[in-house]
Length: 106
Ligand code: 5GP
Ligand code: ZN
Image (cartoon, rainbow, N blue to C red; front, side):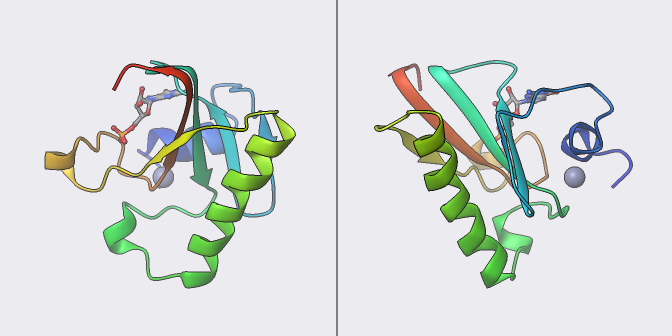
């Protein structure tokens, strides 16, 4: 989607460093970290939120990416968060999974 900040990041428009990438997703540091380590797992395919996503295979792949990326990065203990909808705190309407580790300020 042309006006979606995460689609722009995925397309390389901001030269964001991907700490992990696979066929389905990219993983990068949150710009406003709420923990010592705060990563975002973002599917390459645009979907506004979990409510709009009916792709079971993609959802499974994203959870596997959480496991694979954290393992590769040496993160053993972490919290995962998916904000769905404005009232729940979703600010970017491109589905993503937060990974928070270390001291968490949430
Ligand atoms: P949400 O509140 O939608 O679950 O989470 C969106 C997250 O994206 C926030 O934690 C926010 O700090 C992060 N974010 C928003 N814009 C950018 C950006 O341009 N770059 C990066 N790396 N993170 C962003
Ligand atoms: Zn998008």
